[in-house]
Image 1 (cartoon, rainbow, N blue to C red):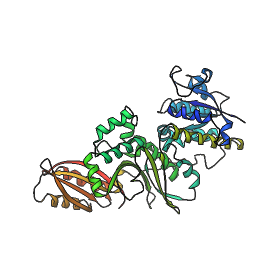
Image 2: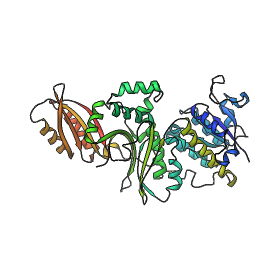
Image 3: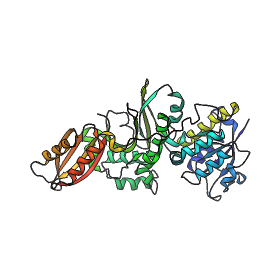
Image 4: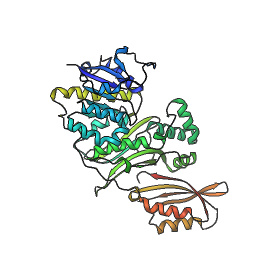
Length: 428
């Protein structure tokens, strides 16, 4: 039997999907049962790497999601709208969905999965989180015997590329971002990447799967890498760390759940410290398995198309058994999991302070931290920066709210000129 696929979008990812489906030789045999019936594009005249007979192309995207002959809709448009509306209309018309759209799933997943469950169709999203890294199906199936404790991931290739170059070249953020844009590793508007929004969408999806509940995306703490400087990279190196933008989901023993994205000092011996360039990686900590890490290309035509087609194969394998009957592939949970406010999260911190080079300044800092229950691992004057003492602080695990109160008081001291950097520290 041949299953008809409607493809929404024929850009980088859509073109990659089309190339795989049109060249099934040497791949999974079920690919021969998948045929592209129609392709929705915004501009019929736009040159494309994948050539289609004009009869397959249309700018009427709704005609694809309502076509009674189409079995599966692949959405690779990106953005919230019209993707969300088209997905919902496709579900209402009995279509299975494969999507690479993390923003839609992270923000509107509850609405989409409720509709899919009511209609009896699948919504598959392997490509939405880490490109070609098969972490979604691993969480749904292979790791099902485990109790997940922590997910720690490098989930955005653009920021990892920028931070890697900053570390290797001891360069500043702005010129390396500009070069990344020139090379095509960063968008013209890079905000979603460098401000951590993309990674926050992805960790919300992973946390939902790992901890069995819907994650309120607006409660995911999000901090990007704009404030990271060459000085921070250099000090991190001296202290035995690499700076990475980490997405973290952690369930404590009291069942409280924290989900957050922020730059982090990662110890050099940690598995994520050596993940460089545009690569992504996800480290899972679970019982009884322990640690397992998934790593690979997190974006691009090949990686993302690979994940999209894997989802198509899974659907094609299940369709003869009846619609949406596989409990390991459907969304089972309906409750929302409240997240621990960032002020209550415990973490280690690195901070860099510029102060007047006067006797007693270090003592004042230590006294202030002690008054706010902030335990220090080190408090060291590194040198002099523009006639100001440069002080580097590393804490033990402390409550974020108490640490921030201490830093606010320190910032207001007459001897303190500036606090250029505060970055969280992993582990310890």
